[in-house]
Amino acid sequence: MKLQVVKETPFERPTLATGALLPIEPLEESAWSLGSAYTQYDQDGAIRWELLSTKLKEYFFPSFGLEIARHDLNLKREDVQLVVGEGILMGAQKISTDASGRVLINYAGPSQTFPTYSAAAVMHGEIPPATFKDKIVLIGTTALGTSDIHITPYAQMPGIEKQASVVENILHNNFLVREELVKIFNAALVFLCCIIALIYLPRLHASAGALFTALFIFAYLSVTQYLFTHQHLWIDIVAPTTAIFLLYTSITAYRFFTEERRARKIKAMFSSYTTEKVVDELLQHPQLAELGGVHRQVTVLFSDVRSFTTFSESRSPEEVVSILNEFLSAMTEVILAWDGTLDKFVGDEIMAFWGAPAAQKEHVALAFCCSLSMMNRMTEMKSDWLARDMKPFQIGIGLNSGDVVVGNIGCAGKKMDYTIIGDTVNLGARVEALTRNYHNFVMITEFTFQQLTPFLTTNADGTYAITMPQGKFDAIHIKPLEAVKVKGKDHAVMVYEVALQHWGTPDN
Figure 1 (cartoon, helix red, strand yellow):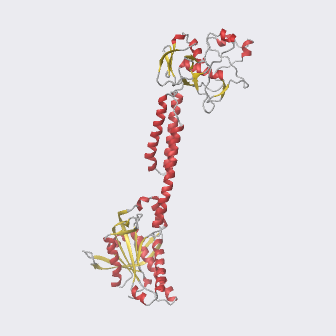
Figure 2 (figure 1 turned 45 degrees about the vertical axis):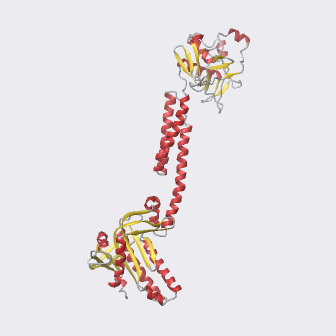
Figure 3 (figure 1 turned 90 degrees about the vertical axis):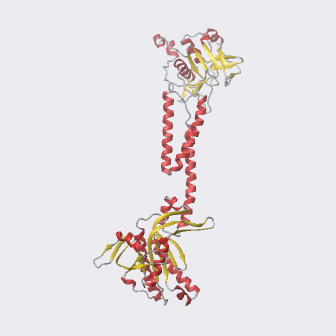
């Protein structure tokens, strides 16, 4: 009954028995062979492995199923040889085992997969003898009350049916395969999954990342299922799929908190500059708010109070601050209503621009309409101030369009301003100053007028109309003045006067 050992390996970990429980004497004496029926259970209580060899003292003994298969194959005892830690040679075939001499049982199916007959029916002659001709017949208990009912990956089944699957596996050498190298493969696979996830997941949005993770897991499960059912190869699914899922969850959580922090930072930075719509676009495309400067095509607006020094001298500081805050608040509401970005207040001067931080194709039209709205609002405020026995003041507005550098400029960590710089800005400030010389309210440059033309509709009387989602203006007078040479410019620039009839004429 002992196995002939032909080779030992340095990686062997044979299963050691401390003793043997033999059958009752009549059965032992009549048996033509004995085999070990020792059963190992996994942590969940199921039987997945079969010990083909067990070491007792210095000898190795075959399992019950191995002896049944040997007799069915008409092999002599010396034809079955043990390579400890590798496998068993049965004539010309080799059954591979792990270092402990175990094999993974490839169960033929659930209970009753193999034909089962009642022992009483056989003894009473109810089963024809030809039923068992040239068959291997295993006899065992199947009643639930016996101690030979076990848990398998399928369900509960009698131990004798488990032995039937083992004998079938040996005869056809179709055990499941879980070699020692599979452990290394699983570790490598987990590492590979993590690398793939780290490369691709950060580049994807949350929904796309979820889809990628789901498809990856589905593909992996499909491949492992195919290998299991068609190649009898058992590859771990829990570790790799759990790793990729946890990695996706971790990356998503990290991005959620970092993006939320970045969103709060961007919102705090720009909420006082521009409208909620523009801030929302920045939150969707945070790269638009990166530090540093980028080139943009914008329209810049300058507004300034005329003779503010004279206005201030005749009033108390508290009164000046109150009316200035009222004026700046009203103008800020108008600028934000027209999706403008409020750059700064310099005393009584206002600077705003369109076309940044988010690109605006209609930046010229928005800025132009905003200047008209500002003057309309000033007309209303003048009436209110007169009703309150307060002397109103006048403002001038200048517009210019062109290329600028826009970004956060200043001292990092100390003082930063989101602003625009460039010759376009300087010219816009110069044009606003020219409103005093030409005694008008709003002036634009030829660069602004050229880009504004596609948005204008010409009326029969030669005036213009413009319609935007925020509002409509009609009977707009746009009159070319002259080409002027402003300070800092080598070439003369044509300037235009813009007016609506109800504005009247500036007092100064």
